[in-house]
Length: 71
Image (cartoon, rainbow, N blue to C red; front, side):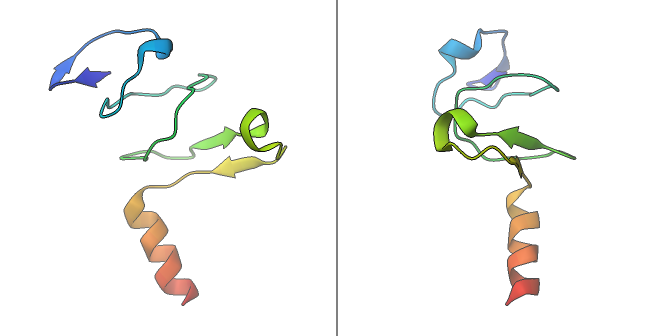
């Protein structure tokens, strides 16, 4: 993860607001966040929302592009 511009290794329980983290397949990350760069990112949010379907994630630019297409 990057914290204050430096790359550090930290347990997911100690993630703080403003940290930039790298996620890998199978990781359990107990946070809300923004995808900066990624491909094929999805999450299971059943523990939070009760929804059992996988939720696909995209970057802000990708989400805005899809919204513009929809509009």
